[in-house]
Image (cartoon, rainbow, N blue to C red; front, side, top):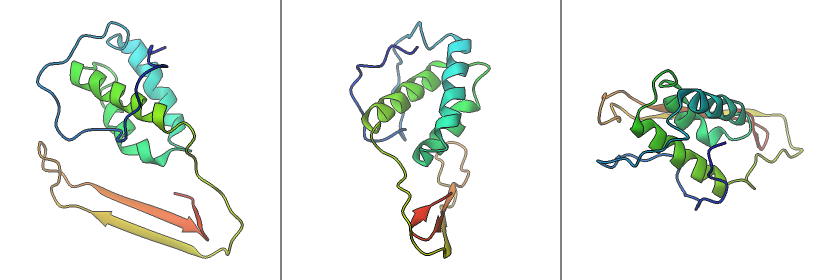
Length: 128
């Protein structure tokens, strides 16, 4: 659908500094294609929680994706290309529930909003 099946993989799903100029993309600049891909990525979050932030960020622009959003979507798809074999292992262990959280203060350089995250384990298996 996005013509990126043979792309080079990336190690990071997003970037902190966007380039000044964006090359045009006729396939992903169509809003309906953009929405279809983002919808598929929202389901993928269940098994790839590492892309949750990026997908949330991109899904906020589904009605009118701009060139910078298309650039970030391409980066995310290239990241997924390199992490196809990754997954969440589920192992038999104790049933102790443990959670961890972290946050930064005004970490977004544009909006000065804070970002927070958490993870919860049931035994040795991450569940959220």
